Amino acid sequence: MSHRGRHLAAALTAIVFGLLAACGAPAQPEANGREPVVVTFSVLGDLVRNVGGDYVTVTVLAGGGVDSHTFSPSAADGAALAGAHLVFENGLGFEPWLDDLYRASGSHAALTVVTEGLPLITANWPTARGAGGDQSGLQSYDPHVWHSAANAITMTQKIRDALVLADPANAAAYAANAEAYSARLQALDDWIMAQASALPAERRKLVTTHDTLAYFAQRYGFEVVGTVLPATTEGASPSAQDFAALVEAVRAAGVPAVFAENASGDRLLNQIAAEAGVEVVATLCTDALGLPGSGAETYIDMMRSNLTTITTALGDESR
Image 1 (tube, rainbow, N blue to C red):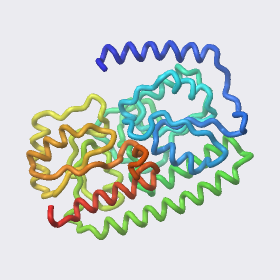
Image 2 (cartoon, rainbow, N blue to C red; image 1 turned 45 degrees about the vertical axis):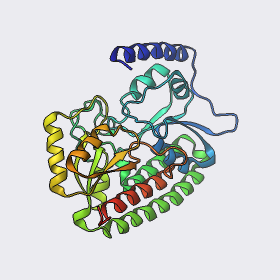
Image 3 (cartoon, helix red, strand yellow; image 1 turned 60 degrees about the horizontal axis):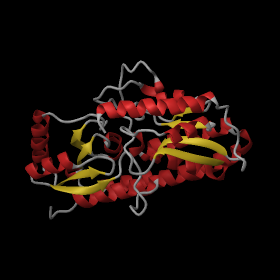
């Protein structure tokens, strides 16, 4: 869609949201007694479902395989926000469309930013939202915190706390669900540590389409050699100088493979791989869960799939 077309679509959508807000009212519990919850993207949606269990109805805005950086919300998304009790967001500029959507919908839902309090990695791109939802935007941070399973445990606890506050009658269930899921996440973290440690350190080098794996690399002992795009895919394109520098970096690092991603185009990555003489391996799920049948439809499956793809490609001595 053209730049002008996007603005027109946004204006029309805002009108629809305005009409919804004008005749809207604070959300009521659903007929089945479940809490209506909206979650901004698929990875976070899976965490919320595991904690909320049978006591919540979860609507995910940017679903599996969808790039949250460039996601364009619909009138139905605004209606979902208007009817929600709770909204869970990643924050850190990952959902640049959310603030306008929330205001236009007239929602009264409580907002929870799940990255608040996490140890953050400084990003190399500007954002209108700083850490913890701070609107000053003076410091930008990498939003892809979930690629560390240890961070996912902390996010799970924050989800639990928000659900308990909104629905204290079911606090015990939320606490039990969070404890059980956190145990599974701890087992995942231990497994990734063990699998990564079995890969020689000199082979733990990553090149991806865009800058999504800094938390993964920091947690599990990898080095990010370079990325085609920065941490956001929106409007990003490398200069000829940056392109040439990345080709040289790939050659110098001696990596056998580079990795495509499910929510990003791989045309530029293919060009870099061809010039550097390495293989492109598909496909890591980074900004979104995988589509049905991908084997990466849940957070835990996504992390296991990504790690297996990475270690198989980088550990292959024939490459």
